[in-house]
Image 1 (cartoon, rainbow, N blue to C red):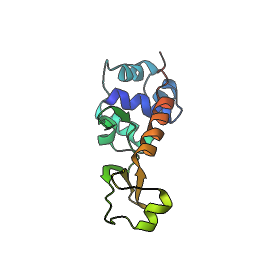
Image 2: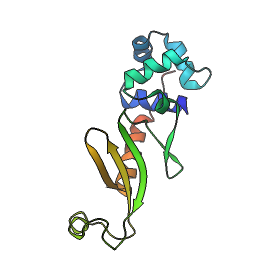
Image 3: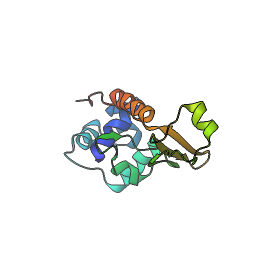
Amino acid sequence: MLKENLIILRNVHGYSQEEIAEKIGISRQAYAKWENGATIPDIEKCQRLSDLYGITIDSLIKTTTVDSENVIPPPPTGKNIWGSVIINDRGHIPKAVREIFGLTGGQRLIVLSDEQEGIALIPAEVFEDNMKKAMEFASVKPDE
């Protein structure tokens, strides 16, 4: 869990292992051991990492998946992925909105939120496609 998040976050933010190590005050070799799962950071280093990435320690050490298989990066503090809802045909979403966005009964939507901005509903297939693209970008091999 932690090691996957470290790799994903570093790659998403475009850092090398050396850059992360420098930013949190450790050696590149020590950081590489965290990504390899050989060791784990102490709580102080976890706090430095979470501050660097703008996430909570909790989200740093937990792995979130979509459909029980695709790991997604930890969201920034105040942003959440709540899960999915199914559109029904009886109007929980106004008919005009369903027509404009091509939403149909039985379609799955992902519920996202930003504590400052509000709630968003995104078609599951769009969200999952975007996450796959992001994860492909983030799956670059860690530095040796």
